[in-house]
Length: 230
Image 1 (spheres, rainbow, N blue to C red):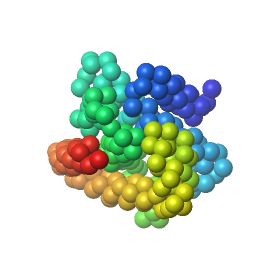
Image 2: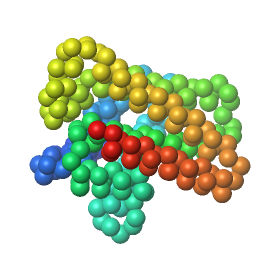
Image 3: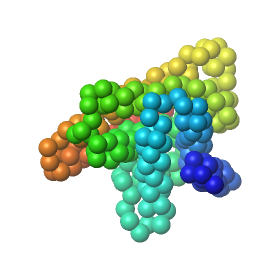
Image 4: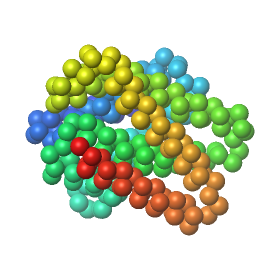
């Protein structure tokens, strides 16, 4: 079994387990699985400038999600606060499907992806030419195209199952609602790249840690707004 197939199997097995127990956390992970499946297809089709780099980043990024989940479930180590917020809220509060989705996206993209990008880029960053840095950025932004292709499937297969009136909005607005969700995520991902570059350019580990703490506070605040906002 190749690494991509193993990742998808791990994701969708957990989705099935959570769905069977009516655990709302399955909503984000199901969407993440659909997104990952499309990413793997894009890699197989040669859509990226450096497929090996994107593949390495994709799996390292997924490790952040599953490591935090393991920490939360085993209680042997404190998970990152952004993920404690997601898991506690999703398990203990009555949330809309869209809240489950955006809470997970907020933690995984706005926090995990910054750190994952920084981890993968750091060993090579100082020796990358401006052209090669631009190539990395363009591969990062091409993921937005994959997201846009995934959002409609997510809405049809995941969100509308729990929010039937979203189907009415979908028919009345055409692609507008998908565009709004996709645009939000793409805007967040642009911020992610900028923050990752700030981490990479920070001159000391102390300054990097200060930036990480600032990021954590920002993501937690956004998560609180998502919980209260519906």
